[in-house]
Amino acid sequence: MKKALLAGIMFLAVSFALFAQGAYFDIGLGIGWAWTEIDGEDVAKWLEDSGANFDEVGVDLSLKIGYGPLGRAPIYIVGELGGVGHRIEDNTGFIQFNSYIIGGGLLVYPVSFIQLAGSIGFSSASNDSDIYIAYNSKKNGGFAYNASVAFDLGKGNHGCLIGLRYFNAANELKILDYKQSQIGLSIFVKYAYRHKLTPKPTAK
Image (cartoon, rainbow, N blue to C red):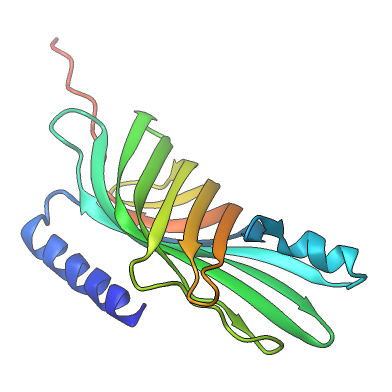
């Protein structure tokens, strides 16, 4: 994950240097709900059926960089580094399932204040716990995609995105070839730097 983060930072620096007039950048986090299955079994339901009393939360992180708009079309091409975490915790300890994405996608503005976005790419899993052994994904990685809709607030090139995001990832774990499937649904807030299209001047 450290290598992916470093690659994202380097990509960001190059993007701003080469495409200063059309650079796109957003970063932020979300909080909501997450569901994790190991080999088709819902982890939270299994714990609940076993009599455990716990709290759970989903956390979503995302960094996007890219270029746009493309000509007079309100479309942006982006690369994304992000992920979702599903934390299950009680008074004895915690388990946290994490799935990541590194890939590419598109942003579209059907109207000036609404952003629709989607990404698809490679995934990895890096889980943690103070109760059980940590399960990490195999090196060949998995598959992930996400989609979001957001209100784009702000003036000029600086804005604030407030929206809803869906995340889906599938990975094969190192231990016993278990399959991990993870879904996240979050409400997010992001800072965004983007060049928005301005209306063409009307002829007098």
